[in-house]
Length: 138
Image 1: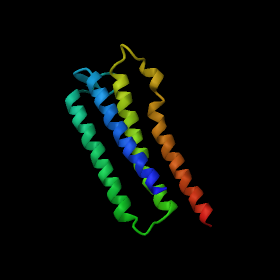
Image 2: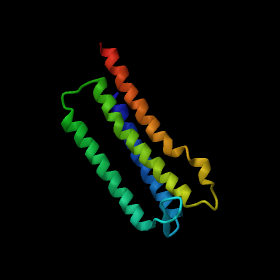
Image 3: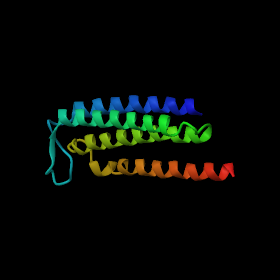
Image 4: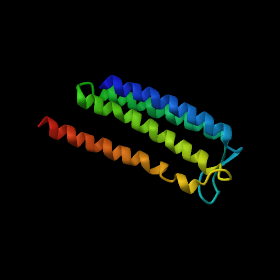
């Protein structure tokens, strides 16, 4: 099971890289980050900041999982390793929404508001999985 989640993690990393490059290619020079358009950032700055955040979050999660939970084995370790996939997928959805938000001439951003809610829903499902594992072991 852990190997399957590692494959999902690699898949989510590749998906993030593809979406980030696609969004970067279609972004205007000045990227709006809020509704009012008050906070603008250069698209190159956004690209590098998002890339650094993605790498830092992945390294931090891997360190926490591999060093902090060494004693966990089996299904609980697999459950914990799924968190990396969920966070990567959520960051992918968020950067995709930023791309949709700043390309409003061709795509309606209101049609893609659900992208912001998929990540928290996946985290809740992930936590419910913990409850299921705890009751399964007893």
